[in-house]
Image (cartoon, rainbow, N blue to C red):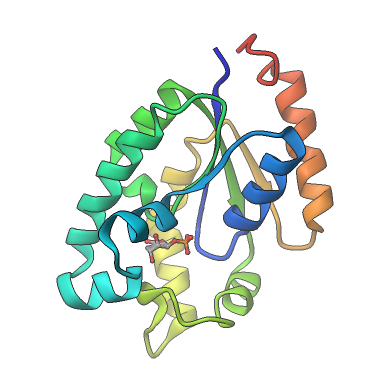
Length: 176
Ligand code: S3P
């Protein structure tokens, strides 16, 4: 079985960027769960949060993850809050290897300030919101098979680290 390669981690840790590059490198299909949700609901995530609230978004997220988890040999980038529902993690793990990306608060702050597309960070005190959410989720992200700090590495370096891990674990030949 060729497992999916699933990227989890906080906002701004590089899931989408790394996922897209990794998929290209491995010639595997790439899918981003947030974009899937937006396509399916014909609405941006920001609009979804402001019109219907976070719990509505989480419902849609669960539906999309249930679908994506059935894919084979895809690279899947998830939203930062995917780990909040244990069933999401269970589903993704059943058929996938989970890679957690992390980054320092400063780097997250910098990377997430470029665009206003993260409703959870549209707060007055962005930094303390990040610190609080990180603390709440820290343990949940540790359910991954490997964790990589992306704070001061180039995308290429991160891709190489992931490839070494996948090769050594036998994930690229369906041995695992
Ligand atoms: C969220 C992260 C976002 C998106 C939504 C909620 C979160 O995805 O799913 O805004 O709870 O951390 P990214 O991690 O891709 O920004």
